[in-house]
Length: 347
View (tube, one colour):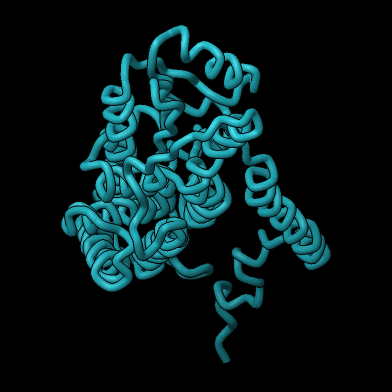
């Protein structure tokens, strides 16, 4: 009867030897879930509860003597508005159309006039009406309001555009996770991310513009914006996983969902969020995507260069990491031999 082989011992696999004790895993779940809930409540509730104008770009046009009282009244709301002065209504209107300001107060012979752009943000247009027309009406002065760049007639509150942030984020995260879990690498992974984003862009444009008629503008520009946003998210998630392993999937998802989504300013504007939430949101794909979508849909691309570059950088860096991880000899430690299994002997 042959002696048992030394390699056939009943020792537990190496992977289980490094697994935390059961009571530590239970404690981790007990602590982790409330921590995630607290983080989510902070990320979503804090900006919503502190929404107010902060250095909101606003134009003032007209003779200096006539605009002085208006400027003083606006400056009394310390830190609320960043005033830009223009010579006349034509210059102020052009500034609104170029997205230099969210609106403008024009003081002329026929009385004060408020120029707004509900397409840039319906909530900001409402804030401007309250800040300008409200005090004037209390003083017995009637203010004429002109919506220079109105929102879509079928979506005057911008609800469809606001609601597009979460689906695009989920689509990008889903694509990034799928690429990693399916084991795609290098050029195959990059191709899958790009193709998925292109399809997402076409589907989103077909729904938001062709069906709901909530997002006007050039169809291809709108579809490209949707697709670039999804690609930036998907490439970021997959790129982080390619660099640091599957933990990057969770990190990327948390970054997009708990910071990018609530800090995007989609329901108001970046300048309406508490600092530094508004600035952070514009450096992340969801916020940059909403800003670019508004530019290409309503303003002929005005002020769209910055958001487009932000999305392009996220997409390029993420795809670069995915391609680099596919180079032989530079793969992450996700693919390891099974515990206890030895490589086959040479020869």
